[in-house]
Image (tube, rainbow, N blue to C red; front, top):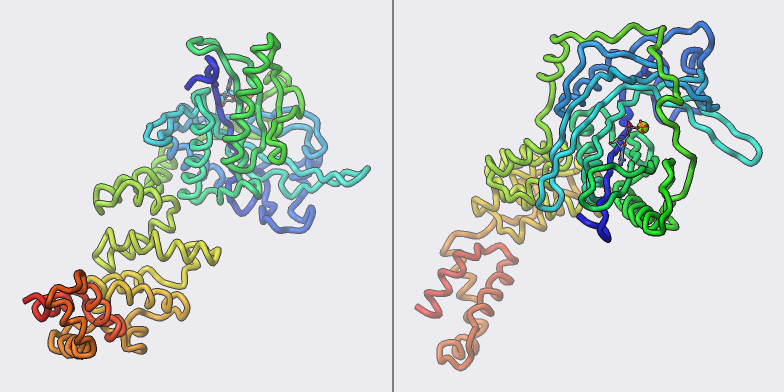
Length: 478
Ligand code: ADP
Ligand code: MG
């Protein structure tokens, strides 16, 4: 992709907040809605003499994520101190990992439009979060609830070339961590934070240009817009003969612009060194194998299986595997109904529409997969027509009843018995003697549809359309 003869280079760092019950190095709760500074202890506010203890669950979540990203898991990794001063960082350093991260050398492949894109994962390392400053007039309040919450920082190589690839990469990571259940993926609440590094170079050049870092963008749509803006801004600078400064910039979604936050530190400014309070982290092969065995089927594999096993179009498979709970719902519905495409159609149109209109998640659906599967089965068996099924579906949504109950209560069973259908047809033909005459003499064309409609209406939509068609054909055209 060329922008006015330039190529964009993008690398992304995503901080994933691991949803453990307690913090990375102490037992403080991680609960999101706690009152200010309720989730703190001498460890998380950095009192002298306190010592960190590693959270086992966080290690397990990090290994799982690393495996899902095709990373090698280091048997020995090291926690390091990243030193800098900031009020929300009470110890004066952040415990992170530096030259020996837990996970490294992974790759991830995803689709951007119809193109496959593979991005290398340089590393994924564990670290602790900082607190949050709250500026109010002349004062700054600090809330340390977040200080010490475990983060997994996932870092890519400078492998992306367009804003669309960057946004799709972010969506893919979000989908994976949600499938794994290690993070809720909520960008607005900050459980996932995305920093995009962007530089430009003359098309064809191998040398990397100076990058800027766009920090903490809280939606993937904004990731795309911010990078788009940044590419143009940098090209303008280069064209004017100016130098791009290595700096951290923020995205202003109202103005559609990025602006300077601070000039960026280099690694040596942080004076990294191994944290003497923590032993190196030793991971056994047994633990790695246990985490591997515990991995769920990942989104891409599941999507491919839906195409191969259930014969679904790729588009359907993509929608249905977007969330693991939705994919689960689909599989149960398909199993009960025995109709893979039917289950997909009903979920993708009727169910997702109602969920969307009512702002509900799939797990809040008042219709269970079993009942939806039964409904689809009843259409396939001819018990009810597709049209009546739509009305039954809405009743199921309202009353949380099974389709049998609703059909019984409302007397909606489809009429397929030929003699009963014939009786209705005869009544309709008698009542429309003039039209029958016109049809027979060929005075009016295309009256057949009119009769079908009249019969369906007379039967309150319950006559089996196929049977209606057959008998009408015989009576009118036979
Ligand atoms: P730091 O930790 O100081 O932010 P890293 O070397 O870890 O720096 O790189 C951070 C991210 O920036 C990585 O995703 C990397 O791929 C990306 N990156 C590095 N150099 C460039 C560049 N010149 N252009 C675009 N992205 C870059
Ligand atoms: Mg960084």
